[in-house]
Image (cartoon, rainbow, N blue to C red; front, top):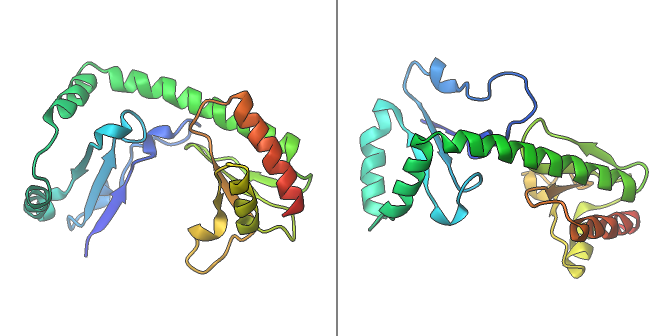
Length: 197
């Protein structure tokens, strides 16, 4: 059995605390942990470039699977990212991105507090671009999701993140886009719908 440690959103950590680069690989004495990540969420979604540290046990198998599933790799995209990394530009980019995402998340949270029913609760993450919202008692996240779609507002009902249907009163809002007047109006509409859900 192997353990895959996916770190695609690790780069969004913005609230101090322990070093988010620490991994379970450091304690992996049996070489069972593979760490993988991607540049899709932080740099270039269209490039579809990621990486894996398979360890000695899985290295050959990973290389064979890669060779069997990829006819041709877009080497120019890889060269662009390699150059970006070698120049130290990626770390500078991440610092700016973390600040922008943190500000977007805070502005979204303030708008939710302003426009949603009074007994709505927020879970503000220590990193990442996703805001979890607990709706008032009796409200239903799936019902709100369906009503939001009618207004062309995209949210995720919490129950889809549970194997046993929990979190029916929760929704998730992505804060990865710059906070604009259009987004604020969407949150205002969502807050009104939440009062009816």
